[in-house]
Amino acid sequence: MPACRRKDKRGNPVLMRYRSRLFGWKDPYATKETEGLFLDAVRENCRFQYRHCGPYRDILDYFHFSPEDLTEYKDLENLPFLPTWVFKNYPLFSMPKKRMLIQATSSGTKGKFSRVGFEFSGLWNGLRMVLKVGRYRNLFSLRPAHYIVLGFKPHKGNETAVTKTAYGATLFTPALSRTFALKMKDGKYEPDLEGVIKAVEKHGRGCFPVRFMGFPSYLYFMLQKMEERKISVKLPKGSKILLGGGWKQFYMEQVDKQTLYQLAERVLGVGETDIIEFFGAVEHPILYCDCPRHHFHVPVYSRVVIRDVDTLKPAGMEQVGLVNLITPMTLATPILSIMTDDLGVLHEGESCGCGNTSPYLEIIGRIGFQDIRTCAAGAADHLAQGNHI
Image 1: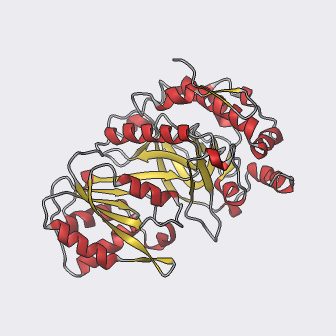
Image 2: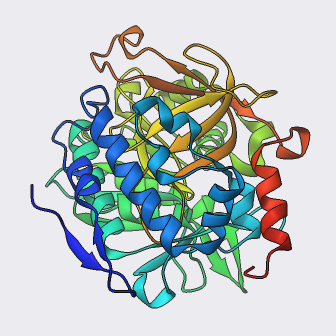
Image 3: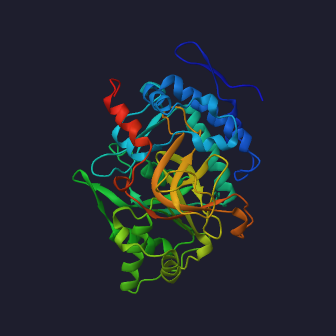
């Protein structure tokens, strides 16, 4: 395949042919077959970040790591990772804002949020990824549907990735209507579960499918209210529930998946096979879509390293540890390797039983970074003392 040639501001050619081939791979879960290609794509992206993002270059230099050290697939474990809180405290970009088509932010904690930029090629890669993963899970349909968005109604002041993602999901089919659970009022978002319930009752009497998209917490609150009022509907065939974004500040009210699924079937008539969950983060904008057995198999566009909480060394399969996510998706922000505050386990794909042999990630909880010491903390201190931030 010919190289995709561009020139940077210094006139040097930028080659991104490996990333293009990776995101164009036909099977979105052929992780074994794409190991070499994934390594090549990460290396070429790492070279770009090293040349164009001074703070990121300082981090690699701090750990005596060069993009050329990525010679074998196992070397991906040695790529210095950045905790998500680094992005919440330092603006890290590898190109000027005018070259970014959009910037997306995390929902923010204690007033701080990550900001990630996307250039055209990064967004194009994301679109190809969504089309492949979506087809794999039969998310697309030509039949129109009514959408209940269990999240934020888009607003010019809202750049959060979760809002953009939820709205984007309403494009999986032609949208007849969109009803939002969180609406802007007097400068802040307020829940409107009553409006959502009325819409569900109305569309439940129609002939077109209803699709829910958004936070599982608001789905649970809606279903609880409906059951308490003895309201139940039988939604039209083809209705689906798409969930993502986690429980956020409602973690104390969180219920297990089976409890939520059973409640949805009792109140809405939507069975477990039509409930699909997503996992992702603004700092790792890869679409993790669960399989029919509700496991998050790793797609070809990313790799997962589970790290020991105490030593941060790779923990291996079936071991609990911190979740380190790697992807070469975008150039605008150095999010090649990020460390989440999620605790997880990586399982052998064959153990799932759905037929997908790619390893799958199980998220089992969260840990605060104030409770552990990371090797990237030294890099953050180094950046804070520098003159470029």
